Image (cartoon, rainbow, N blue to C red; front, side, top):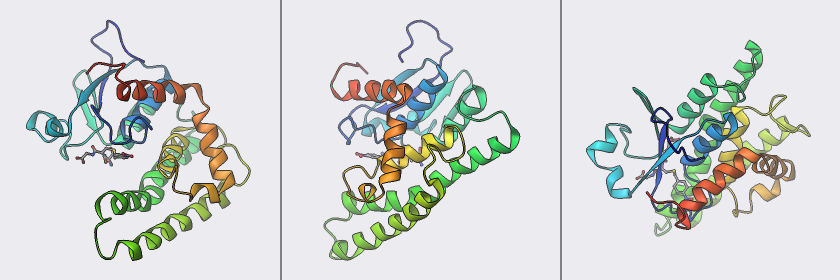
Length: 223
Ligand code: GTB
């Protein structure tokens, strides 16, 4: 959702040229999705790999990465924190009931702190460690760690649609983490989790967010 006029809408950053070639796997995607879920218009500043490491961007993001979020005098980084901020400020991503809200926040942390790490390790192995002598030995170990998490996650999800009653920011982050296993063959071994991801991807807000980041890759959005 691109803002046409107001100066007060948030601005997020995204890759000028995402290495995922428009698959929506980079960290602007959960932020876009959250903004779309709550109906908050936003602007996007596209950023190159070089610019990401410069002082201007590092003032926003100490680690020189995407995504960032600027809204008036507030500047945030870390996609999970940004999604949490959006969910706190708008209705739609966290339940009103205090206990249900706390559980949804717990799932946000679980996605980022428990499920995501082995997924990131797999990405690091595949993209950064492929030329190492130990790569062929390491990859199956990392994938076993992912399966261990997915075993437990699938057991907890059971045949429910979402992790705790209705869709929440916890599901948004969990689905986005699981999407990063697309094409690995791992997620396909868990039909209920694959269906859970498909449910997330079928949400209109997801589709709007996905199309917006894809438009960057296909050149339909100028930086
Ligand atoms: N914990 C941080 C967060 O959630 O915001 C992680 C941020 C992060 O890793 N950002 C990455 C980045 O800016 C982009 S998303 N990297 C540039 C750098 O560090 O120099 C990671 C990512 C990149 C590419 C793919 N892909 O091609 O599939 C998937 C995920």
